[in-house]
Length: 141
Image 1 (cartoon, rainbow, N blue to C red):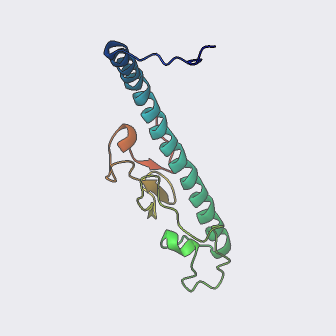
Image 2: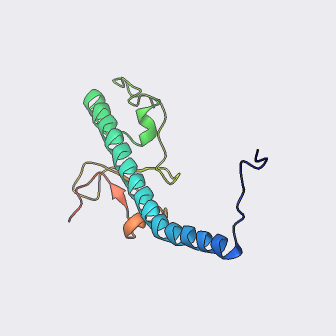
């Protein structure tokens, strides 16, 4: 009877180096695609959160007849008699996907009554790609 039923074949250095090289090439091809998808997901998340905040501001305006002074007025009554909030379910103003505060400007700079915006990945005004501003205005294509 054969005592060694399972024989363990050792890999040569060349086989191991080739396997590592193939994995590195695959990672080099896949990583940029994954990072691009992650950046797009953050943009979509910011647009969704801005849309929710915009709806809350509309609800505030419907109840009070005025614009809030800040987004914080959506969760805390600053003394308005007709305030019927909080206007956000979790009673928290979310941060944008990059960890920054959303900005609220009234009147808006983009032919809106108000603007809600994120400065994007760099946290600074302007920029392109992931660093571009994202807001509740209609973007030109």
